[in-house]
Length: 580
Image 1 (cartoon, one colour):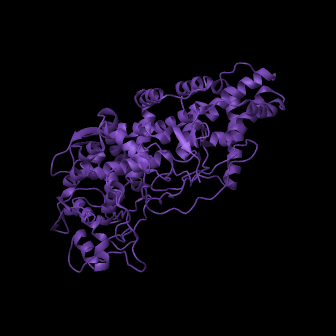
Image 2 (cartoon, helix red, strand yellow):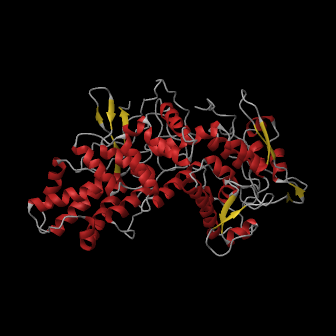
Image 3 (cartoon, rainbow, N blue to C red):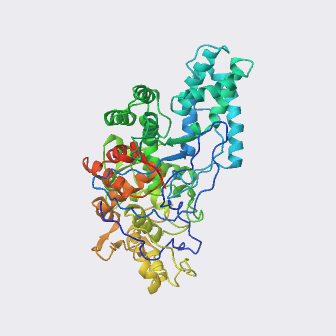
């Protein structure tokens, strides 16, 4: 694994905005460094979903837990984790085969490290449980009344035992992403048989299943292999993991059938089957759009692009409309999709792309010709007009800027913590984070350097600001500039390395991107965040997983899809151990 710092650098948190307004806090907080187990449930359908409170979590991703075995075979703990809002909504749409199904605002996923995937944080409380019950019953009534033939392959409509059982097993298999045990079928059959008609019984069963932890949660429990303390995930658990990892929703029929067949033979999905279905999900025309959205969810969380949506801007300087913010995010998504799926490219390609996708609105904003109308068009970038790569996108620059002025600290901090995985401590108590304007015209860089020149500030800010000043060709709205307040901007910067490393001096975003594109630390950091996002937490000896994923991804030059698929070949994807 590439070298990652053992502890936080300096004492820096978010610097206040250079226009005197409070700074935007970072998106989310860190994952706990404990076992990483989710809020578990005994799985009884009669009771409500688990109830609990999320634990305290640190603001940075925890340190890598060293791998103590040579073959890197140590997996993490068994978990039960609730579907995220995105997963829940996608699953409901696919379960009922209706994109217009009413979706409730029930869950409020905590943001941890920019993601809503942390297993420790995804819990259900009392009020939420009541809301789920109300929604489930209403939805069941709608589905059975209007879409009964769509939600089940069962053709009978009688109350005899065989018809009841057929419906329960058919709908339950898709709702629970698994085959129902005889015991569970009997429990639902008792509910079904107490009703006066098939339709009424189906409504009760569907409503009950939608409230079940087997629907609301992803179970990664497995079965113990001969008293070894290692639990092999079941075929259906693996199928569910694969589908949610790559498409963000429930397994499709082909994947469910593969799991059914393996389970019927008392076997498991083979590595070849997992690889085959993974490629299918990424390449098939029916599932690729889902995979594209899921990859972008990871990129938005890892690179903190979601800050674009919430960043407060001063409209007296420039009116940044919601439509323009949407176009900025669409530009970035288009580049991510083109790089990962069309070009089979790497993150380095994302950093160094000499083209982008813009429409007339973005072209006007950036001062780039070559696009008209509302649809995005691929254009080649001209040197001196704008740097290439994702770090010159408005989605990143605008989200990491203050209300009026750019923020070298925010931009540099993102590079330091998100691309290099080098955490930073918060500032000491009592420090004024707000930059004061100077008496004479000055650039943002000059104001920030004046504000942080004191020794107790400079020792921390050198790790971020010396990177962030390289972005000073761009204002807080992502627009190119050669001067600020009549003064030429200075975009020379330095990546200050830890004491054992050598500093890297650069000029502008292109040279910084070249440095990051060649960095082994960036590759390791991407794997670390992607593993956290995929598996919902960190755990003891999680370094085994990171190292294994890196080894697998390295065989294909860390192409984005290869990193994603390498997660499916890590021991943790199919095996677990008992947590503490």
